[in-house]
Image (cartoon, rainbow, N blue to C red; front, side, top):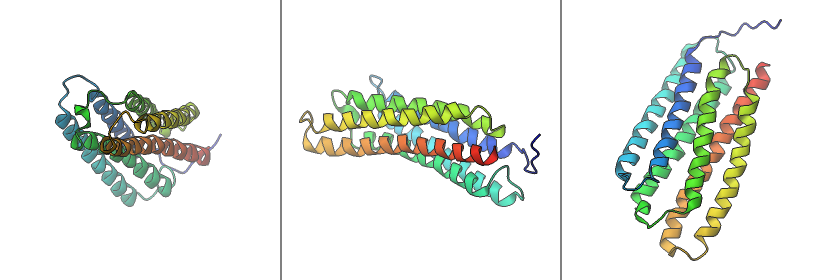
Length: 208
């Protein structure tokens, strides 16, 4: 039987779980942008509120690390996982902010691929939120990082299709530039989810 001197204190796991639940809230808000007659400014403002809450969670996590003598796993990994979860939220907020500030939701229709990318992010967010509580036992995590990586590959495929659509001549040059910036943030969010999954895999391997 493996014996560990590391504590099983729940505060760190609770903070990771709260941060991941905010990502689910974030992707749900991005999905609202596809609804007819949506108040885009309201969505953007609520995304900013969620992002600020995520910042506070990250701040609380760092304070907890600095005030804890023995952490549940390596401090560097705790810092990295907390920072990466915050990075995802930053990208999600940027998507909503750019769509609002650039007035892109006023177009007759946003590219289908943009909505497909948000759907991929929504799946990654839910997977991540389901996985975070399992860090405490370090069990049943492999399916999470495998599926999250598969979704990242799916996001790459959709992003390539989105770029083809943008440069097909369907949109004027200024709109293309604006939507390309949104596409970049969507891809960055998708990549950031994968980075979270890869970090969880690294932690699980170290602790096994």
